[in-house]
Image (cartoon, rainbow, N blue to C red):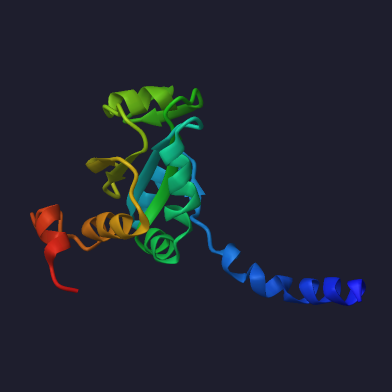
Length: 161
């Protein structure tokens, strides 16, 4: 009997894990910028720290939501940047540590989400936890071109549909 129960669990395992295969495809900073430039996609930078509870909640909830993953994959190159990180990166021709870029960008709270144009220019930021619904609003605000059309974020989220 015990063997039959284990066999049943193992036979169902592929179905239970089917949704786990879809994950945000994170890139490191400089390769991510290069990829965005080549593809014409926006850049989404998640600035986090290992000690940040809301950063962990983003990873465990928001970045596991299917709609968020799909939108990031379709319209963005996704990058994680450690606000305390010492790994070397290059920004606008200058070499620095990850934490130095976070400081240069004025990050003073975590998590901070930075949006870059395909050319690597900062076009927006959001400093707080974003649940999947709010994250979708932020991402589609950028990817839809509403920002470029000078639509305010508040007007964008009030639109029908």
